[in-house]
Image (cartoon, rainbow, N blue to C red; front, side, top):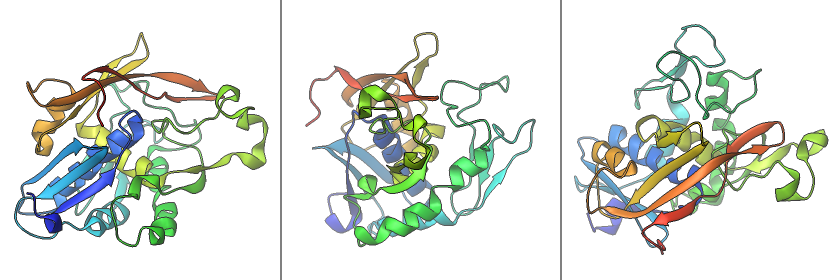
Length: 262
């Protein structure tokens, strides 16, 4: 587990919920792609560490290729704008974290009415391909890669669409709507939210999640995100949904337990 060849290290800002869930997504994809496993992930020193326990090299390209190459197919239920999507080989996971059990949507459904759930997932693939060259196969700066794309899932708290954050409203300036979004955060965050869905208080519009400090597999880490695994919490954070012009998204999180994570 401590072999550097078998461990990836990705820089992360835990107060950015998008980056946190993207790390969860990397663990999810690794859990499904790096076989026979197991795979463990944890947070330390402003990094997310992802380790293969089978002694094989941990290559970020394996995870990126899986997210870019898997087939994304709509599961037709009632409305393509919110229908679940099924990711095929080699990931094999159903994404429907924006839906409640009765089929209605929760606060995490943030995209515009003219976009389908499938379009929202696949729109990040080509932008990610276009900017991968700048990291040259290195995992460290994956979540910092940016590319001009219109729209967002809303969980990257560094994206500002309102006048308070950027000095004026981008919604009033159509030529400036393609902001430098971060496709790896959007793509892997969308995968991570399925298993690692946080504590959501819809009436208060608040979200709570916990980062863990010891190596955990994906099934155990899912419980750790909710603060249900004693002795492993690095810090617990809280954020809330805020308005971004015509849309909504998550604000920068604050640490409510555990102090600094540095």
